[in-house]
Length: 86
Image 1 (tube, rainbow, N blue to C red):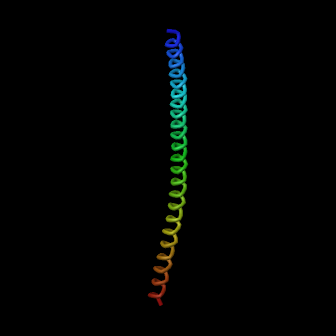
Image 2: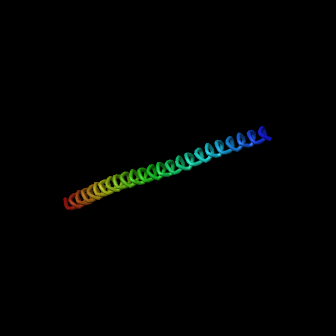
């Protein structure tokens, strides 16, 4: 009877130890997942910010290019008008 009781206690202790270790691993895993989620959110935010910066830069370049093209077209039209006067 004593041996059975010792085996039962030993089995119970092993079960509790293993359960505690599994619970700790699960908690650590959940924490890691949450941290990964935060990291991914930060990466996404940074990428969105970079995209916005690049889009603004592209828009500014496009605006400048269109202005240059418009100036060129105006210059050509003016030159053509002056040639017609001659």
